[in-house]
Length: 189
Image 1 (cartoon, rainbow, N blue to C red):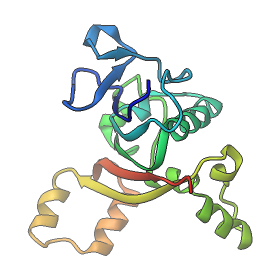
Image 2 (cartoon, one colour):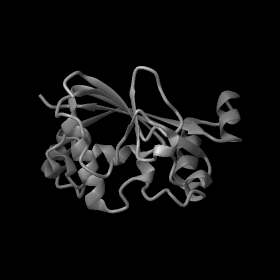
Image 3 (cartoon, rainbow, N blue to C red):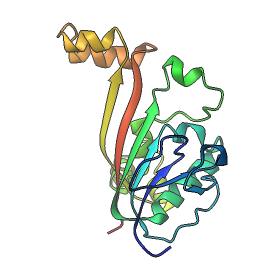
Image 4 (cartoon, one colour):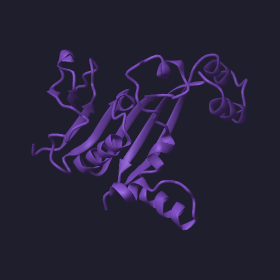
């Protein structure tokens, strides 16, 4: 494939116009059947954008598999490509109720794939695993937006909770945040 692509990976029944909608399950009739846990059938530096809505938590139960997936995403993307990720919060009942969820995904997961962050932690003797350096990939976490379940959403909208209380609740209680929307940028220069 020679032209630049926008991929909607693990699309399921959510087909998006302007994207190559790919999924492993032929029953959802994607544009292309692709096993995301195997080498992808796309050229290096051929993808400008990836949509990954509620798919990463289903992939790669093994650490080696997940690292291979991140390498494959990096390989196919051009410098500056954006990756839009939606995942359930790992402490919400919607994560635990689905037996096909095999991996917790947090915004901090992707900081481990940022080589600038890796070098900072190495220089400061922090214990963070420098996955960006180990895997020869480089992703920048541009944005992470939490979506709050009720009653937290209403409390936020009505000004009944402080940002401190909200952060505390999100870190210590279940069923506060139901989803993360995450934006990554590929850095190859």
